[in-house]
Image 1 (cartoon, rainbow, N blue to C red):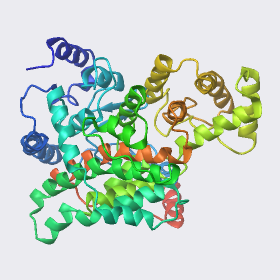
Image 2: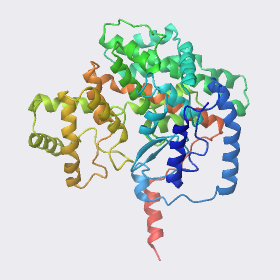
Image 3: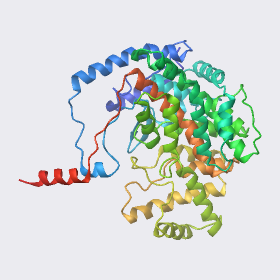
Image 4: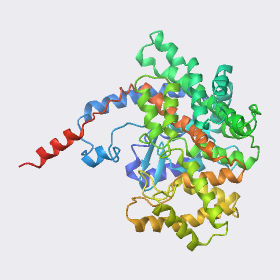
Length: 471
């Protein structure tokens, strides 16, 4: 049965109010099936979407999507439409939509561990793969399946242990993921000569195994570096996010709720960001999910991408160290200008696509207002929200002066005791496995080709522009 008639009515009402969304939510629905098996649900959907893609390409394959400018070529391909990414879409003004649902809608519609709680990441994974909001029973069944897949061979731990304990947490995490590749079902099937129409099935197996196992690898890295190697085994009574929090060493129910929210909102952000695009690019060569995700992690580790969340907390703590916790708005303005005039950026502000406050920031702020309204670092983050955007606007060089997801996550984690900022990108990586693997399964199901854009030289650009300018 539908979870409730009211919820379905809300979705229909929203679609009716925004005609532009009708096609994008064409097959989004509240899950009505009693089938608890995600694989069988996906197997039913794939032929329809394969036919949809085939027909669309035949009818509209020559339609132009825009013009490519020199600025785009020299500017990191910003604004250039060139990639199919089914699981999420990023709007510059309203932020990310997961299968057409906003973050607040996901918080209302996706099953939670407790009434009124944060959405379970397993539910988001179901939504990303099927386009359907699952029932609590389906999410519980998926959670149990992931637990059953969460076995790590000893050699993966040994591969991590071969590194110095001082190695960056992301280096250790990516090493563990690479070690898991030995068990790739896709690689085995490919070597046996599997037909390309079946590529998605071993990709599905690898993806679920990978998603199930990365929290254990990530927790092992954390406990190895920061807790004298004292490992905490999984708790099979807990869900994905709650269990990850437990293995890290945090059993507070509120911290477990934070982890559910964190993993959900960091999971996917359409396909153009570095980690998602890297995962898609590497997978387009038919590299298996382990190889593709490890490559994505190495992109995520960059300071301009996932590493930014650690930079935010370190910068905020530097403000406190220099100015104290009771810093005034005027003092904060001076510190921000000092940072900018020193040739540095204020971490946590701005975004390559968004032009308003990141809704992932907003939902974390709401969590903080509910659970830690008097925390000094949260109050400092609130002051930054008031102080930084006008300064960045005054500079005139920033298209988006508003805070992004990284501006808030570190303060929340720090409040509950996870204060090791160097580790934060690993949390991001665990979350991103859900989005990257969801799309990777659809890449194989839809038979998406090897990615191979054209590159040119400076000479070529100059000659082309000269010819274009001549009468």
